[in-house]
Length: 579
Image: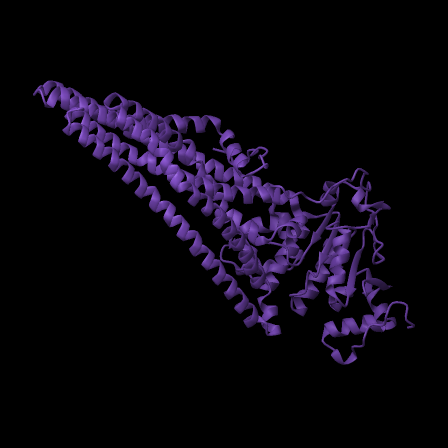
């Protein structure tokens, strides 16, 4: 089975069937072992009726008890051996399915990481969640065909040959019966595939909408739109439920036919065998063997129908995985070397300059404008920004990510011990961890948890308050110790006392390194070396906080509003207006 740190390989993304075949080829030895074990297991099941016929004809009817005991003993040994083979077969096929599951998870997670910031623009969160929760297990289950599926085909042929030694008409009925079953169930499985594809699509859309609603619930509640969106979501979920019922209706017919048709088909075989026995065409022992063969064939014939059902569902799931894997990350054509040392970041679209080695604060009346500047300076989208005079998109993206860190105040927090949540993928010593937590004023977060740094934190930090989550995110960014830190609203959820503490410690921690903070808090602005004031997405003024307060009415209005003094607020003048 694939190791947690093993390379999963390069998937075949030319289609759902090819992806499933790639999963089989990745574990050739295990797949062949599963096919062999499944075939031998089923063939030995079919051997039992043959041995029973010999025991009846050669031992029971002539009254030769020794011969009967010999055949019975052979049946016992064969049954014990087959039970052991069944255990091996089950274990092997479980490993086949688990390997396919884990390999697909590794491939999907690795590709999501490579997509990086492009993922939200290419695929919804619901799509990724649906793939990870349902589709991976569905396509892994479809690989059962390489074990019992192959075994069912083999035993079907073996039983046909054995029946041929008993009666040619019986063998003909068996050989012709399977195509009839396939013709009757084939259209339903294709219809199921189409219905399930549509259902999976709607399920992904609805899952994405759940995430959006959960993330914006407070805003919706404040705007009075919660009821409106709740009604829309209720209608969407009812349509999805109706689609699920349609899928279930088709699936129930497929499963019913999977049990009913083999039973009817094999009942015909049994009736023909009884008629042949009554006519003296076959012996009583052969009749007993035919009954046994019929019982053995119930499983394979039923499995053929189920196999078509599972394969169709697996292909639907594999196509969704392939569609995600076909998404390409943003093109990285950078070939120019990054600056050898600290260098100025400049955004021509806004005029913002981030001087190396200094703490710069970016204040804007509309937070989206400041965030757009950070996205361009961090190369999280199309950008004309330069770094030391070199266009940022001309530098290899890996070099940019290694030296420039964008710390979003809503960045994801993964579930796990707090120590790992803060450290991320980088091993961190106790001293460095304590220093980062101190700089983010997050020591009380550690003290408030039952096991300190070893306490479990739920996904997205839902077990923490908003202010605690923000300080944990800041501590994680500071522990990474990047050459350039671009922090978006790192203190917006903190009270005034904690915010002042964080501002002082952030300045001390980042002394001599390039730091940009977007904020409108006077407590943070007053600690910055330079404040850049944006108006309509352009630099309106730049300088120390206190000088801007005295000279820029628009800046003064913005800061006063943030500080709670709405009485002094005034509209920001347009860029170029007289001051």
